[in-house]
Length: 249
Image 1 (spheres, helix red, strand yellow):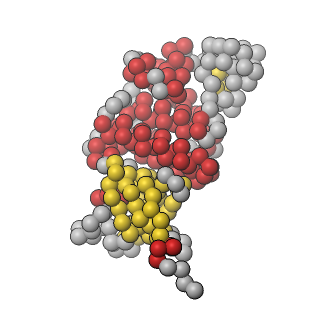
Image 2 (spheres, rainbow, N blue to C red; image 1 turned 30 degrees about the horizontal axis):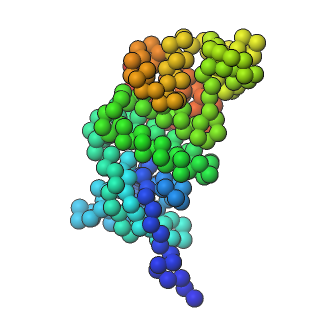
Image 3 (cartoon, one colour; image 1 turned 60 degrees about the vertical axis):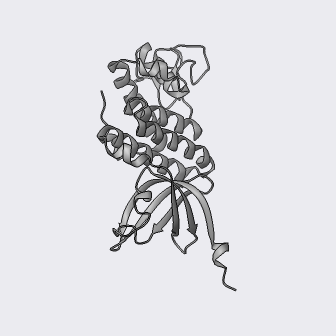
């Protein structure tokens, strides 16, 4: 017996990570949902000017969706806006490029680690909300998100005690393969030697100490961005294309 329509549908909150065109009027969406993890779905007819919910399914938007299970892709049948973050983000290039890097990271992390998807969903919408209202410098919001997302996925870095032996810090060396700060005894050749101000900024971004992060200067921000990017690349085993377009101080 064929399944009823009700048994094939489900409702969930979702943030739109990425879209691409399908046919003449449809769009494929990569969604991160609150309860169902990463979902790929089709929104039919949303590229027509007469579409009732096309604008609700743009990148970085958060919506309550009604979806039905499909053979290969689910189908969006209803959409109600819950967070119109896309408008504020798209109006500013620095915010947009930071959001694109966040979305690419979230898509990658929830593709390889579905168990943390619910926590990753909360991190993404928090970052998009902060970007949309200009709460902090876009590059700081991005780096804070990246560190927290990696920590949520099980790769929490240390910026004080030695990541290898646990020796109390602070320490003056950083190794992405070893998990962050390393003491002189554990420091491998070629380790970075960030300034104390940079390590303090990284710790603030990881813990959400925005008072300290907002007061940081250009040099620690630039240095921390490189360390975060290297740490991200080491654990994802790939370079994020969107990071290349992020504006840095």
